[in-house]
Image (cartoon, rainbow, N blue to C red; front, top):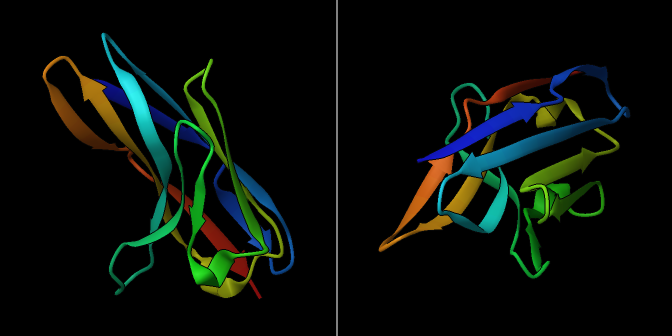
Length: 119
């Protein structure tokens, strides 16, 4: 079992910043890729950013240069620093973890945190 606890969503004006955090936990588990996805009303869930355990990052084109993903492997935590936010960034942001348990791999999702950017 993998548990994810997210924090940091909220309401911000366009041009502002928010920082999302996600703490992963579990027994006999190692965390590989961690990241964030988002889903706006009426849209499909889309990748925002991911980071591997060795620090390789991947970003959606729409957030490159504005968002930065980081992780603390010692604390099993992943952060998403979101700057220059735009109304189009409004969505529910969910933490994602690809984890390795004894004998199997699992993908886990957080419950989601709302980010609303007002114009």
